[in-house]
Amino acid sequence: MRHIVEYVGGSKGDMVCRFLNREAPSMDKNGKTLPLSLELKMLNPFDYTLELFEKALVENEYEYMPAHPMWYTNDTRYMDLMKKHKYDIISIKFEQKHYTTISIENMIKNKLPDLLARLDEVPDFAYKMRAIPNNLFNEMLDDRKLLHYEDLFCSDQPFPHYPHRRTEWLSLVQDSWCDFNGHGYREFKLPKTFDGTRRPIPMVEQIEKYLSGFK
Image (tube, rainbow, N blue to C red; front, side):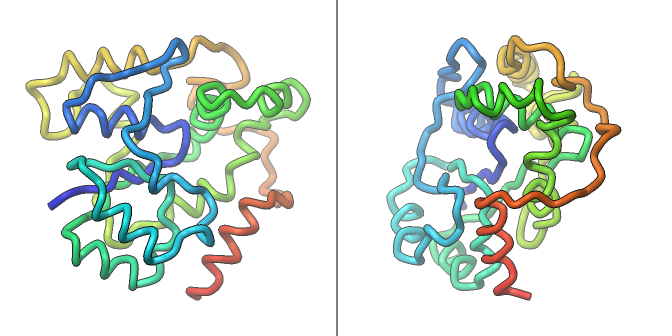
């Protein structure tokens, strides 16, 4: 059995994959981990086809493969392909108090200066910009084994089932944080100004449109 590690950008999924595959960390100065593969990292679920998905599964050479949110697994044909090729999904879930930190980390590590600039312009922007897709992602629980952000990155515990690698894991976590202060980064608090207002973000609209086909 091989495994797909499903995560949102900024929640250290590539680091988890490298650790589990016993690959070198390969971090840059911002704590960003070089991904082992990109085949399952497209953000728009409409970009995936059964052919592309199966090709990625067949050609993957790692026991643990990284993937951005797998919205398309609502289509049972994709799950059938995973069973055919003997894969399961391990999903890194998180709480609302983590949204701000994960979003800021994604902006820094993926070099999105325009979004970082908006942190000074819009109150609680880091929380607001991805609150809707984060909610949708954390509600996607079927056919998944769960790992929890709080346990992985906000404690002094070893990676689950790897107590013998505790020191190695905690060192990786420490090195993975960005050198950044302010705007709620690593404070793990809910914003006071978020009112749940929906804003038209093209990628979110694509995700919601895709998921609406399975209701």
